Length: 171
Picture (spheres, rainbow, N blue to C red):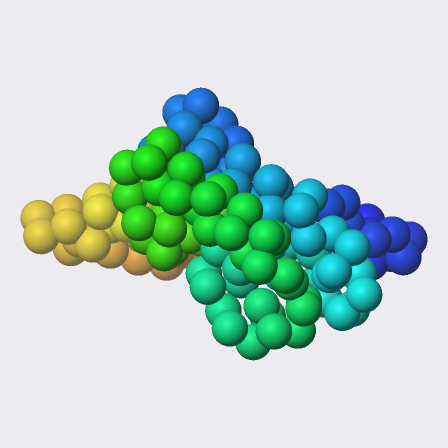
């Protein structure tokens, strides 16, 4: 709401986890940022977002490689960075990217999704309903409520009638 109201742009989000407790110990993070540093000028010249281009190069996307117009030395360096990441993480580069993306989605869902909880008022209402609609207590509760709703006004009117009749008898 704050960002929409004041027209502020959200901060930069880093999708790759650099935490030491991540499954690959930050190898994919270092790989993507190393490639990003290597291709920064090419991405700017091709008008492609830097992180997108770096991630697509890790995937091996031929269209991005062609659009960036990388020479053979840069392609070899990128391949070496990817091989080093695979050795450090112990998994394939595509599996590491899929794991990074799904972990990010999981973190966003865990942050945004709020599971409902039962409030005190709802617990109280359920307990009262259990008594009022119980197998053995329902009829007793309904008869007592009828007695209170019909009996109280009749008792009051009977008292009034007696008071009035006593005052008439004095005349």
